[in-house]
Length: 279
Image (cartoon, rainbow, N blue to C red):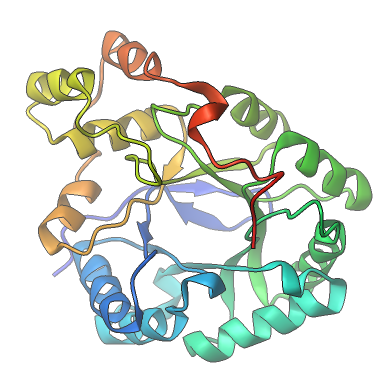
C-alpha cells in the first residue's frame, strides 16, 4: 500500500516533478531493484539513477516489480562526457532506455560539465533536440555552475528544467540557487543530508532541532530543503528510513530553526569542484 505521495513542482517545459525523490548511488543492480521497489511502495514517485552508477538495469527491474504505473513515476538518469555531442546525447539516451526497459525518460541530465573536455554545449544541444522530439519530458544538468549554465542558455536560448547540485546545510550554494531562481531552473539537491565527506546529520544544531520537532535529524534537514524550495533526493537502502525520509510534509521548521541550519554553511569548500572533477 502507498503511504503518502509528495506534492509536485511544475518544470519550465511543462512536466510535473515530485518534490522529493529516492537516490540510487552507490547501489548495485540487485540492491537497486529492491530499493526502488521499496521506495515506490512507500510512496516515492521520483527515482534518480545515472549511467555512471551502473545500476540502470536494476532500477528498471525495480520499477516493474513495484506494480506502480509507469506514467505515475518520474524517472531521471544522467550521462557521462563520452556522450557529450548532439548525436551522442541521443545515443546515450537510447542506451539508457534499453537498459532501463523504458519507452521514454522523464528527465535526462548531463552528469558533469567537464569544461576541460569542452563539449557540454553540444551535449545540451542534443538534449534540446530530444526534448523537441518527445523522447524525454524534461532536460537538465548536474553539477553545472552559473557560468556553465549561462553558456548553454546563450548558445541555445533554452534553460534547463533542473540543475542537480551537491547541496546541504553544510553547503547552501546561495549563488547557484539565485541563478537558478532567476532563470526558472529547479534546484535539485544531491547528498542532501551529507555524505561525500560532508558530516551534517550528527551536528549538535541538527540534533537540537530534531529534539524540538520530535523528528529524525534526516527529516529535519530534508524539511529545510523543502522550505527553501529545493528538491532533495536522499538515498537509503533501509525500508524504514526510506519511509521516514518521505514523511517530511506534516511539519514545518520555524524561521529560527531554518536560520540556524543555514548558518552551518561552509561555503564552496564543502562541495566537489565541477571545474576540475567530472566523468
